[in-house]
Length: 477
Picture 1 (cartoon, rainbow, N blue to C red):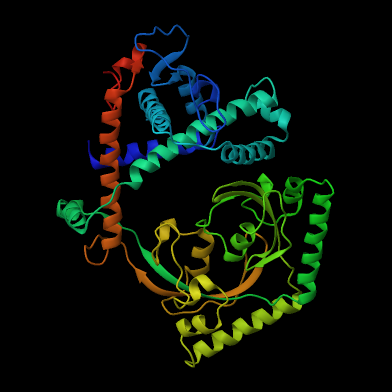
Picture 2: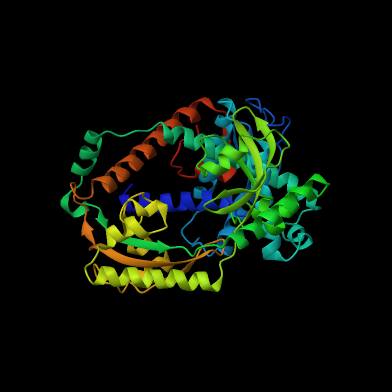
């Protein structure tokens, strides 16, 4: 198989996995699982003995404890079309192969005693239902769109589907996390390319910033503290914490799920939040807790050893127009100092910037996808790209008013510190990227080996015309 073909297949595989994970992009829950869950935190589908003859119409494959229906493939095509995914060259054989891979992962996850907690599934399900209702207009329209008998039956099927998919994801993660690569393996990976086959990396740039946040008055802080204290009293008197979080929380990551998070001491949350949460007893609500994000009201819903189920309401004190104007004046003054040569951009970032994540590095932004300082232009956040695209190296932008997801405003200066033209991979200069490619190739080989071994030891049956498919895996044993 050529490298181009491998790339195409990986696109198909990754896209389908995404569709499945988003709940309505693909398989129906009833088709994924034979029997609903029988234990609180495990999935135990019915066992299918070897030799059992399946007489259920539409069953095209069996993988361990799971079945694949012909209608699953039809639904995948339908939803791919709805999302404008090209399907002209995607065959039914490729789709059934992907579905069977997912079932193999889920089946093996059960054998390996991988646990998916119901609270985690419910959180994802609530978010997806909120999304469906927002897109379709109402819960009734959602039920009708998915052709279900009732909201309860829809939730039951969606719950089972999400739980199975999470098992699949955890099994895949378990396999990949164990894969490591040595510098010698990276060297061998690069050395095998002929000159005309060396990977080409797109044009990139490095960007630095200085952020100035408006000062919040004590009066505005007190307003937020008083509101959160009043909410705490309301909850003590019988109000729903969940409802208040949905209505009033300014945290976009948890608002729709009633402020829910599952955390441990290692969860990358701010220290103030974790310290407060782990000091509470089960069922207790904190006083307002201040962090860099604002003020939190934290409710500990469940304690499981070192793991907490928490809900929180985040509120951020509002910035006055005067404070915003003062922040802009400060940014303009910093730019003048840099332009006059009084201070460098990097030193100004270290001494003046209010962004703690970039301050110590002289304002250098980190690419969240690669955890490097370089941003590939074609994959860059469009907003950031538009702000820096016309800047020359070392040129500083005018003051930019920035608004984050919570509506918090600040002013910033941006500069392009380096540009890199499109180029063939260089082993010395692009080692990190080459290492990433080498690791991905090794992960693919590891997964292929794992799949081949598990297919041999798992009950698998492919029915009808699909037995003639030319699968990447040896499904027809």
